[in-house]
Image 1 (cartoon, rainbow, N blue to C red):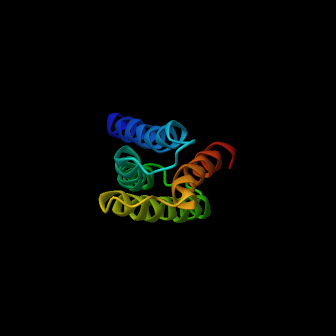
Image 2 (spheres, rainbow, N blue to C red; image 1 turned 120 degrees about the vertical axis):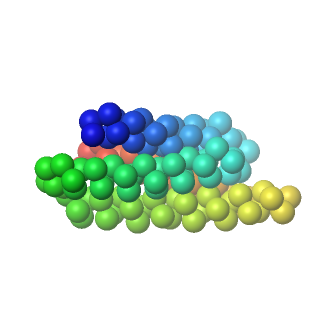
Length: 115
C-alpha cells in the first residue's frame, strides 16, 4: 500500500510539473501545450487515487482542503481542454485561458504546501 501511495504521489507531482513547466515554457507566447492537458488529467486521476488510499488508511483528511483543491483542478482541466481544442482548430489560444492553466496550477500547489 505504501508503494502505491508513493507511486500515486510521484505521478501527482509529475502532473503538476507538466502544468507549471508548460506554462513557464510558453509564458511569452501563451498557449496550452498537450503536456499541460495530459498533466491536468494525471493530476485528477492521481489525486483521486491519493485521497482514496488515504481514506483506506487512517482516514484523517482535511476534506475542505481536498474539495477546494479539486475545484481548482477542475477549473485547470476545463481551461486546458478549451485551450487544446483551440489549438486543434488552428486558432489562437486566448492569453487568459493559457495563463489560467498555469496560474491556477501554481495556486493549487500553494494550497497543497501552505494549507
